[in-house]
Amino acid sequence: MRTLVVLLSFFTMSVVSAQESCNCQSELDFVIDYYEKNLPGFSDNVNSKNQKQYLEFKADLLEASKKVSNEVECFKIITFFVEFFKDNHSKISMSMPSIDDNNKEEITAFLNSDLFKSRETYNLTKPDLKQYPESDIRGLYTTANHAYTIAVIPNKGLMHDYIGVIVDSKTKLWKKGQVKLEIKLTDDGNNVAFVYMKNHSLRYYNRFPLYNGILGDGWYKTSKTELVNPAINSKEEFDVRKINDSTVYLKIQTFSGSQTSKINALYEKAKPLITSAPYLLIDVRNNGGGSDKNAIPLLDYMYTNPIKGDQVDLYVTKDNIKMWEHWYSSISKDTLNYGEDVRTWFKELINTMKASELNSFVLRDKAGTLEMENILKTPKKILIIQNRYCASSCETLLFWAKQSDKTILVGENSGGYVGYGEVGSIKTPCYNFDLFCTMTRYNNQRKYEVIGVTPDYRLNYQDDWIKQSLNILYKKD
Image (cartoon, rainbow, N blue to C red; front, side, top):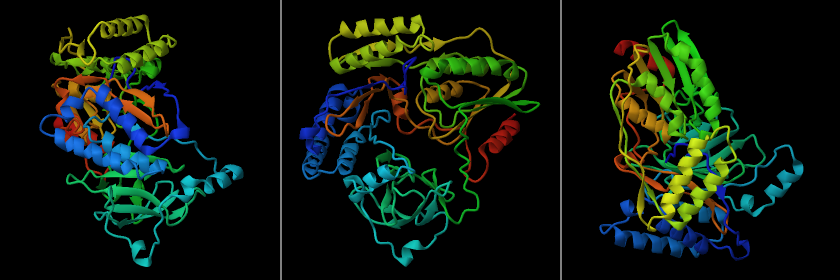
């Protein structure tokens, strides 16, 4: 989930490609073998109670994989397997070359490719083009830039209850009638979806809800007058400014170890502003995490009580040792963001792994308690805005905030990337999918995996989240 330095700054290791003998069954076999050998949460998800179910599930997928020769369909089958494990960081993704809309040769080659020609199509009829109320998933949707317009219609399949079909596209890479997304409804309303990107690569979303006429955060009912999603913040990664005389706004959109120098510069700039105002608004929407170390300076402002940490155990396997050695080699070349203390910590942990028995856990962090000498008088009240894209180290900040008497959490449940960590990435041998696999487990936080951290106050999806947050902050005080 998060090392002190590298989480979500993935360094990818390559596996020798075997395209000449590529088939979906061998691809799935590889993924199954890798997860069963290396996933620290395997025993949390497969035990005596569901062993039979798991074996049957695996056999069904392997049988289905024999009938698949299409890369996209194979990706779906492998995704079913990967998503069996309640470990958000462990996932599979598909990457394909981008296509230049202004390059006629690239466009022609793409339109003649098997990928484009194999895309599922649906013959839209007049009733399919009807608009429905904002609370109804059916209807017409567009993106904020109007690049696509789709019709979401009922359509039952293995992994979908609805499909989104292209009605209009501003890019030549998509044609009317092609299926752009597939949605499976869930009991909690979060839904899951497969979405085809601009270049027709496929991406899986484990949360794809409908709120206020906004589907999956980026699709807006065409009946809406404003195509704005208040749950998603602006594009700037870092910002600090005074909203008014009493309130400072601080935005941090990543805690990535590779951005340490930039983050430290932001903290230096922010310090005199924050300590001179009674209220602090911290915006961590869309912060996918990175390094806990880059969140620690915020503790100075939040701290009121000793902060309890969680025990972190590292799973020892040959592949995991190899991954850590690869990381060590990479960070040793980046002295700007990774100091000697970090490199020493890495080296000592690698040596501990090598000296330990395979398939055992070694202690990475004790469940200690952090005590600080001073409680700052200003800011006297802090509010943190979170959304479902606050993940990993961003969620560490939320766990700390839960233990502070002057901090309030608002927004929606965070991403739920809190129970497992240290994410390694390898390429699969056939289709070169990116397979992500965690290497650590957290003793207490595992119960929040997938679920996420619940805010103290939920914000609505109609009004600006900063304005809502300020009303809560001042009213609470």
